[in-house]
Image 1 (spheres, rainbow, N blue to C red):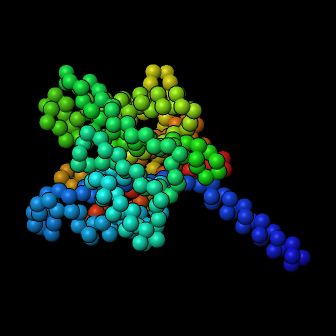
Image 2: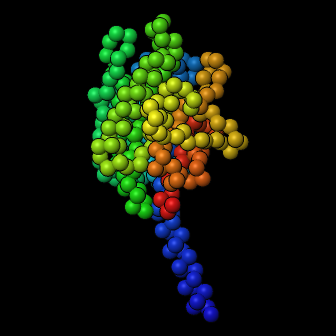
Image 3: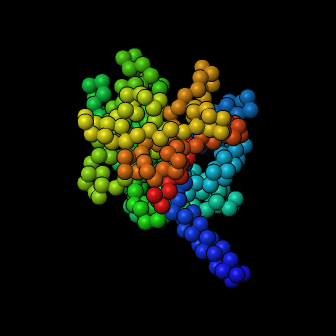
Length: 299
C-alpha cells in the first residue's frame, strides 16, 4: 500500500513537472528611458544623466516578482544598457541566456528582449516605412521578430513593437494618430508576409502601442479586409483595473501596453487573459505598468 502511494505521488510530480515545463511566461515593460539623457533627478536638472539607481532597483523588483521567461522591453538605450539589466537580474538569481537588441531609425530609444529560451531565429525589420505627409517615414523603432519552440514543442513567433508616442510637431496630425496608424499598418503587413511565407506559425504581437485597444492603430492588427488577424488579449490587475500608463501632466490613465494574439495562439493563453502588475513601486520607476501572460502549450 505504501509503495503504491509513493508511486502515485511520484507520477503526480512528473505530470506536474511536465505541465510546468509546457508553460511559458511572456511580459512587456516600458522602462521609461533606461538610458543616458538630460533629466530631473531629486529636483535638480542633470545633463547627460543615467536612469537613477533607485528607479532601476524598482524595475528589477517588479521583474523579479513576475519572473518572465521572455521579457520584452521598450525605451532602453544601446545594447550595453540591455547587458547591464541582464547582469543585474542574474546577480539577483534571474538569468537570461539570450539578449536581443533592436536598433531602428530612432537612435536613442530601442526595443529589446531578454529570454531564457533560445530563439530559433531572429529577424530585425529595420527597413519598414510608410507614406506620411507627402514623404516616406521610417517605423521609428522597427519590428523585432523572434521564433521560438515553446515548452511542449509548440512553435510560435513573437513580434515586439513600440509605436509612435502622441507627441507631434505636425499640426495636421494631432497626437500623431495618422503616424501611429501608418506605423501599425507597415508592421502588420510585414507580419502577414512572414506568417504566410514561413510556416504559418501562431504569433504574438507584444509591446507599447501608444494607443488604446479600440483605436485605429490597434485595429490594424485585428483585421485586414475580411481576413481575421488577431485579438487583443484582455488584462487587469488584482483590483480589476485595466490601465497600463499614467500620464502625470494630465493625471490621465490609459491602456496602451499588452498583447495581440493570432487566432491560432488564443487557445494557448492561460485563462484567456493577461495580468497587469500593480506593485506601486513600479510607478516610481516608470509611467507604465508591466503586463504578462502565460502560454500553456498543454492545450
